Image 1 (tube, rainbow, N blue to C red):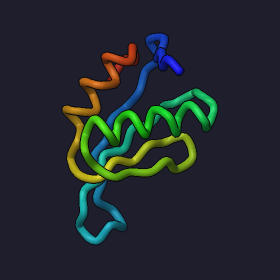
Image 2: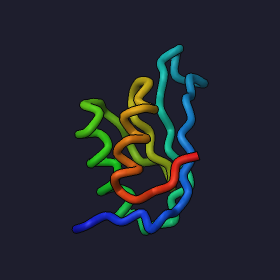
Image 3: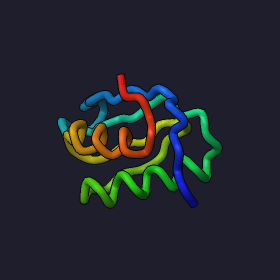
Image 4: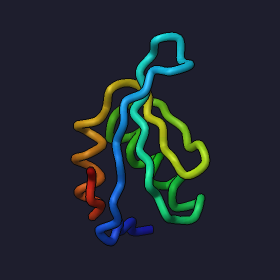
Length: 81
């Protein structure tokens, strides 16, 4: 399946709260169905070489992956704020 962000706007945040000091990159603002969000999460995890999960409509990637995630999302035609 071809993923096209259709110039939708997303936010990338760094979070450590409730994670015993470990850093997680959070991507929020998805307006897709859960299956597409899962597919995007898989693409991002493979691109970053890191684990992660989908929580609601947010994707969490382990570690500070902001730069790699932003590069990949731009290639997928998303706008990153």
